[in-house]
Amino acid sequence: MRICGLQKLSMVDYPGKLAATVFTGGCNLRCPFCHNAALVTGVSEAPTLSSEEVLDFLASRRGLLDGVVLSGGEPLLHPDAADFLQKVGKLGFAVKLDTNGCYPDALADILNAGIVDYVAMDIKSSPAGYAGAVGVPDFDLAPVRRSAAMLMEGRTDYEFRTTVVRELHTRREILEIGQWLRGARRYVLQCFVDSGGLIAQGLHGLEEAEMEALAQAARPFFGQVSIRGL
View (spheres, helix red, strand yellow):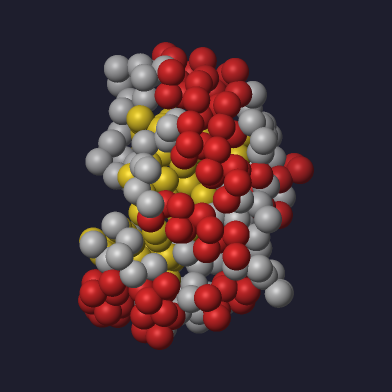
């Protein structure tokens, strides 16, 4: 597995837990607002860590950290992601996976094996807006729909999350996401922040009142709706 980063302590990546976050390189999408663009477009130049190095570090943090997050890029691009997650779990950590939902077969294997405690799946936009939001013309949404449906079966705890960008998301997109994922356990609206290393330029976040209005619009569809990043 190509590991391109390790955040040794995070208080925000795993809800309610102190965690380390492991970042894999590579992604099948080209979301213009991606805040980890270096792990998408510049992955061949990024320094790497071996799985053994990371697992050794995590072993040294048993009793100090509650959980570990595998993020990206897109972790499920890597065939050995499940093996890594299983090894993390055997160290005694709660295990969280971040995914874009494009690899439902890999996700199914992980859910069936019971090796994750929490999955955060990105919902980039409404079905009609997906291709533009992921930067892939003629994007096939069917795998994403499969992944979302699997999570909604409730085999592990999960959240859906949308990073809200002024140029890409309006109340209409949020309502259409709600109609698509009606009844899902948890939905998070994330405030877009320009990290300075985006795939595209000229994108903006929303004001607090605007984010609150979108959250209010989403609430009838989900068990819980929250805003992250205000």
